[in-house]
Amino acid sequence: MNIIVPLRQVPDLVEDLEIDASGKDLDREWLKYKINEFDDHALEEALLLKEDVGGTVTAMALDGDDVDKLLFTAAAKGADKLIKVTGDFPQPLSSHAIARALASAIQGMDYQLILIGVQAVDELDGQVGVLLAHYLGVPHVSVVTGVQVTNGKAVVHKEYAGGVMGEFEVTLPAVLGIQAARQTPRYAPVSRVRMAMRKSTIEEVSASDTAAGGTPEIRKLFKPEKGAGAQMLDGSPEEVAEKIVSILKEKGIV
Amino acid sequence: MSDVLVFAEHLQGNFTDSTFELLGKGRELAAATGDHLVAALLGNGVDDMVHQLGAADKVVAVEHDQLAEFNPEAHTLALKAVVQAVNPAIILIPYTSMGMDLASALSADLDIPLASYVADVRVEDGKLVTVSQMYGGKVNVESEIAGNQKIVSVLAGAFPADAGKKEGSPAVEKLDPPAELSNLRVSFKQLIEPEGGDVDITQQDVLVSIGRGIQSEENIPMVEELAQKLGGAVSASRPIIDNKWLPKSRQVGKSGLKVKPKLYLALGISGAPEHIEGMKDAELIIAINSDPNAPIFEYAHYGVVGDLFDIVPVLKEKLG
Ligand SMILES: Cc1cc2nc3c(=O)[nH]c(=O)nc-3n(C[C@H](O)[C@H](O)[C@H](O)COP(=O)(O)OP(=O)(O)OC[C@H]3O[C@@H](n4cnc5c(N)ncnc54)[C@H](O)[C@@H]3O)c2cc1C
View 1 (cartoon, each protein chain N blue to C red):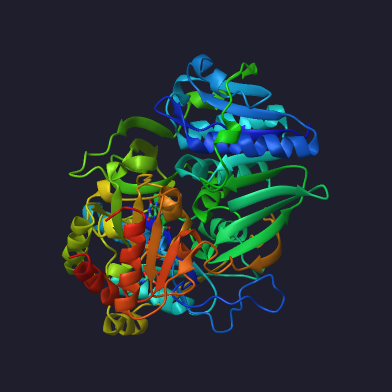
View 2 (view 1 turned 90 degrees about the horizontal axis):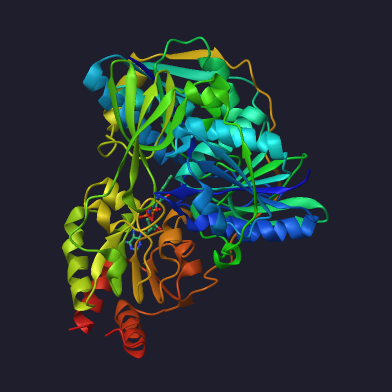
């Protein structure tokens, strides 16, 4: 079974996010990126499925800063093939544009499953996975936590609220928006990534569809008012703990 | 021709809160543009449900075996048929598990622009303006959507549900189910109920809730002790559950449980929209987080910028 896993980097939310001079985008100059955590789960689930039923895992990403490292890291974790999708993409990159570019690169490839992170923190205009499925004309299920493949079909679990899940059988090829892999995504030590850099090659495929459209027009970015609701408690851990206890006493909780 | 259409989401025979939140907001948008509010109701045997959609002027329904339970493919086809029949200007879909499968699908198939992660939507000088909560709630994006039709995918809990809860008998129009429903590639098998947990976190007065800031499983007993001293239980954000450090029954949020305790003490939780929707109605929220910009502080009543590992031990001591 051939599984394609499109990977993306998103701003690392541990860092401070600043807004640029235009007011319409993040200041990307010093921004630190990391893999979209749900894409990491999608890659893990793909590698586990390969261990279950055999086949190949292809990691794919749109060209951009640090994308080689993203792909080599996937190789270090066990991806068999690495593809960089090149093209003159509309900026800022939208979910619709990413999905169109990926679809035009994937069209004609031999695959049974595309596993992709169910969402990313920067998807202003919808989820890449669902858009991709529709541009490719294949079925999709998103918010998936469990995937099993038997007899050319996938049986998947989709999560609703409150822990209720729907079980679906999906004819392949299909796109699955992965929420969580069966196990915590594996970690690739730097030494393995370096080895992958020497041993693996990245194939370049150019996207034939680099159209824009389908997105809202950004007026401005703004930060939510800091601590809008919260009264901040300052001081040493001693003092802070003291204050918390007196609030709890006042409210009759202790 | 410029109506507002709301996808009426239901699971196990009950409309979700999102449905009423969107109907309430839809009413407001329809009033601003002077048009009708229409609810799209997909299912099998929906007549008994219609009276709950009294906030809408009209219900457009599609009924079919394959719509009895949610099915991403079947529901996309049926909702598309409703959109083509009603030709609405604004389509409101909740950013929930079901809505995630529908909004982007409609956008791609019908070439309608889409705004996602929406926390606010309004009509301003004849334009539809949305505010999206991006980057885990750390940055808001205000945008406007052009075109005759637009899809707005709204975060759960963004608007009050009460505004859309109205009994009534709106006119019902039933559409013929699309022929493709008899030839689907996705088939529904069953609903799986969650396993009951050892503790029902929805019934606790006090929840000490932990997030990724707890760092490792070994640190959980420390928090269990704190919860015990406060007469409550430990709940958690999703990554803690995905790591299998606590059972699924302890998860608060979009795909977990909605809780409303007297005290919600959030330790090392950033406050992503998916978490917030599960706990924002708690009576008292106290958050401890080392990041002064953590979105949780927008929802907390009291906040402490600091290391939970410095504060929790002292707090335990003080509680005796
Ligand atoms: C469809 C879908 C459904 C989802 N459902 C849910 C859900 O039900 N519930 C849920 O919670 N999430 C859900 N999520 C995930 C959600 O998007 C976030 O990824 C998640 O809530 C983040 O959890 P967190 O706050 O624990 O982790 P992070 O966002 O990583 O935050 C960790 C926080 O800990 C702080 N911290 C670190 N060290 C310390 C320290 N020593 N002391 C104090 N603070 C510290 C950091 O500053 C940071 O703010 C869902 C996602 C999707 C796509």
